[in-house]
Image 1 (cartoon, one colour):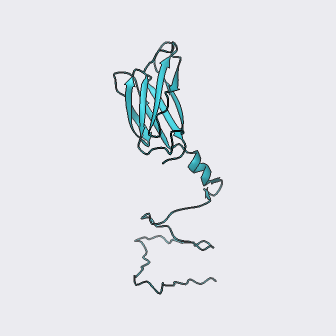
Image 2 (cartoon, rainbow, N blue to C red):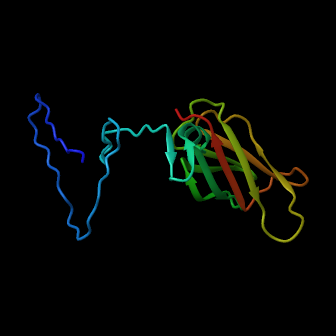
Image 3 (cartoon, rainbow, N blue to C red):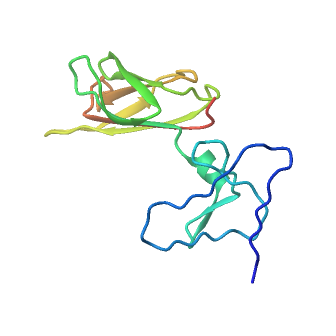
Length: 170
């Protein structure tokens, strides 16, 4: 049977208390067979695992951190001079620059203007709704600019527009 040893720091003067919650259920805390530091809920520690695992599959954190979208937005641009954000992450606003032209402003900047935006969208209604959505020049590290057009390459406001970008955050 293993022993449990609590050891204070000879230089410290603070008191540490281990307290049980108000519970009617038995709980077991299993300590790992490794030396380390406890990460607390108040943000005083940093989790630095080499892998994240759900017990069945394992993914290197480098893939999760580097491969995740750093910003995304789902918005409506259906005319009237306003664009309306439906849902977003790291996007503070959408500006309707002109018919079919929009700029998303990022809450946290990308590390450079060389991030990799991806754009998509759709139009709703009857008729021929072929068209394209284009990246509209460099917005630098703080914005993503786009243009939506119909099949004649005439600028047109789409009902659903989606941006996402990948790269490093500043």
